[in-house]
Length: 308
Image 1 (spheres, one colour):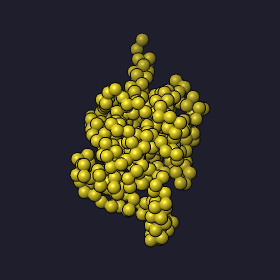
Image 2 (cartoon, one colour):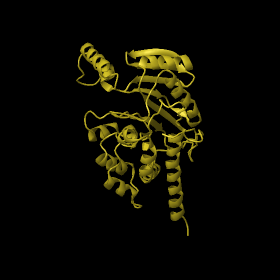
Image 3 (tube, helix red, strand yellow):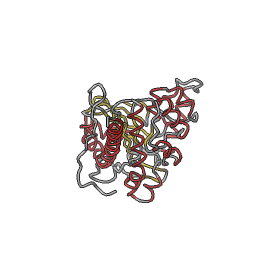
Image 4 (cartoon, helix red, strand yellow):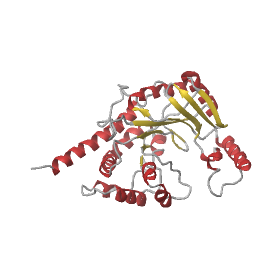
């Protein structure tokens, strides 16, 4: 992927939430190379904080200069203790042993993942330092591996949770999706193959109809009917589950992963920690372009509905 001539992180047109507080974004960076333990230790050495082992393949860094972080093998079965409280969970010891065995077997090919907490937008440049620390510890990856994408995910708080705002952002994303896919897949064949599947064409056409202005129930119903999966470039499942977790889970396959939280899970970008000097800025700025497009559409709608 070519480097951007500028590493400036642009600000969205609406940087504040309804209550006037700054919006925030969480970042997930996938990489290969060092184990979760080695990567977490390298981050702790560079950022300070306390290293806490959750299991041999998952670590928390508490109280770093960039808040609390997690580093873990991106494999749910490697962390079975997180699901032991679920109804019907199997006894703890055999499940833990099976998870560790599976993690040891798949660890060489399954990516590791760095996960930040919610950060103010103006702290995004500091996340570049995390990527540099991972690179210095032997972190590898240029967008994709044989098994799929190396994700760079942004968990973006929207300006508000109204149907108009969310639908406007979804419309803007759908208009921009072909270009976003081309920009992201510039890394080659593997990068293109690793992208999340595009939204189904009939669903995109429905949403992009100028007359499509659903309420929140309609937006959720239409989205879940066409997209019962998190594998979309803009994943709305966390946000919809935050509003109605039971309803969302009922619409999904039993094993689909969803973490309820009031964010837009932007999954299109890819991680390039194996590229020296790589920055999150180009991918973030593409998202800001989506928000600018949505804001422009909202302005035009308001003008059209105003007095003649």
